[in-house]
Length: 301
Image 1: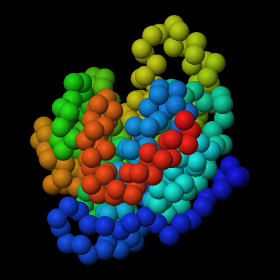
Image 2: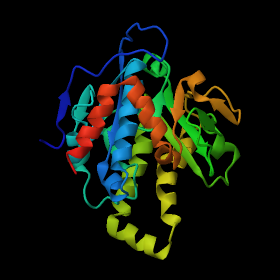
Image 3: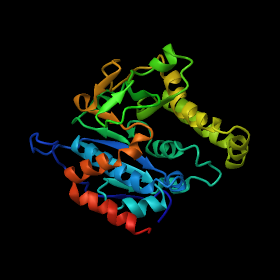
């Protein structure tokens, strides 16, 4: 398979939410997702990640979105029958010089391949409301960016989002914030903002090669995690100030129930510790896809 080859499909199931109307949801717009398997296999989280990706896909389809997934060769093997509308091997082009510790690299390669005008949604994000991203696709004068403070410890209840804030809040009012600002949804219509953000990351990849990064990690234990937090998360908040960016988050309350606003970003370690809940939800919504995760993972032993 060629490195940049994309295979198109008819798409996965179109369903309904829980006990709501069984009417099918029309898929008008396309979101982008990515899975770079190398960092995941290094940290022994591949099986858990597949369940996350499958549940995120199911919710995206139910919310009325087509999904283009960008992954690598192993990802193609594991995801090929999940029901993505397009499955691309774009991330097979990530060179070995890119440190796997810069885990957001896969997202940036996927966004660069798709170009502006589409929203990238992380695979640990669940879109729970039909049309939740439509504003971005129907108004070409806005950018769609969703960021959320992520402190430790978080609550483990999967329906609660802790410390969720609107775009720019952490950088604008808490300059000393040193935690993660999860960037679960990113979509650009403004080519200038997109270029600034993308070029910043790819310029960093040229400087911080694997050899350089390994040396830095040896000399600064633990500090290396700040690299991706800054490059992916903090910079986005800072760069977006002054641009016409919309947010999915309608509140600055300390915690809100995710189902009510239709957006849920599973936080930090809890995306692994809450696996039983994630599996039960996927099995409830799409038993066939649940079994595909199990069978596909069995293929690689």
